[in-house]
Image (cartoon, rainbow, N blue to C red; front, side, top):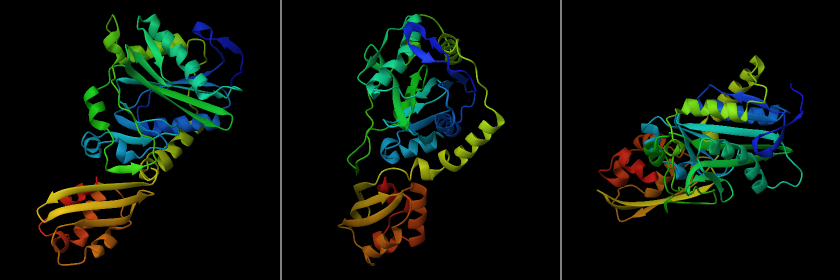
Length: 342
């Protein structure tokens, strides 16, 4: 596509000449599909800027239901999408700008070196706006100790993808509501997210700027020396196919969660009910229900009928209604009982 001549970024960081993409699509399913497509299909280095409509992006090895408030995201129409890279869950909306670097892995460079090198142009761009930001720990960017950017890496064969968030004017209400601190109900080996104090970049600027203007600024500051690339029809078709077959599916976003165990207890009209079950491949296994409630049919029969049901509130409520909870739990509604599974 393009020659790979050496050029110099601000602050003296040298990269091969990169393909520069500014995505106007804000569909998170498609944008995450584009990330995988660019990683696996392009030989050239890539610099990409993009935004998503409200969504939670979870790390590849995370338990989706343990990281999000499922009722909140459904009520607010917030999509949940699993990415290729590791790390924790992050919230995106149109007040957030995302950036991506993709290139061939450099010999001897570990992930800490990668985070430091790829975030350097971002930090310099912010300093040119008068914002003193810094790399904190291994992969977070902070202003006055408050996080505004989480970054993650995927290494595949000899290619590296590093992408990060830049909270500019994101909704802190939706961020707090969509992400949750993991409670004791979930026990697994998944990667846990650390929800720390966060801030918007716009709160630290000395002048008014919209998120669109901020994205244009980054494009001009970091991408000015790179050839702008527009997706071909073949690119669009491949990305759309990947989105449809993978990134827009519950199988990838929820069923790909690592195996986990869930437990909860509640005092219902029938008495105290305690529930414990395993989830593997998004499906309920090894369900056990105990408690001091009264019943007229064996509770083991109820458990057996619920095994294999997806760990999804609507599907569980539907299955419970099909079974009929009255003989097992007395005067308990399907929704009330289904709520104990989350």
